[in-house]
Image (cartoon, rainbow, N blue to C red):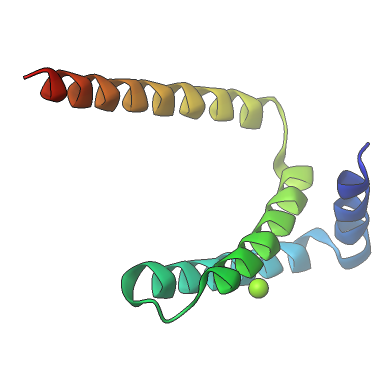
Length: 100
Ligand SMILES: [Mg+2]
């Protein structure tokens, strides 16, 4: 177990799943807010986004300790393969447009 896994597992055990799920909702909302302000009108800077990304990542790791199972891994694999197909199709369109 990595040090990160150990810390996030301890956090879930210490504070409880319900409290950490609510914290995850809060941190993910903070990331959405910072990213929206950064992407739409520049009211937050890259450091603000990075800080909220780190908070969100830590909460995602905690959620993973609560929800990670075979179904999670199966859905992750499916969605990564779907994303790869979308990237490949977009690249084909870009490449064919450049040939013309
Ligand atoms: Mg935050």
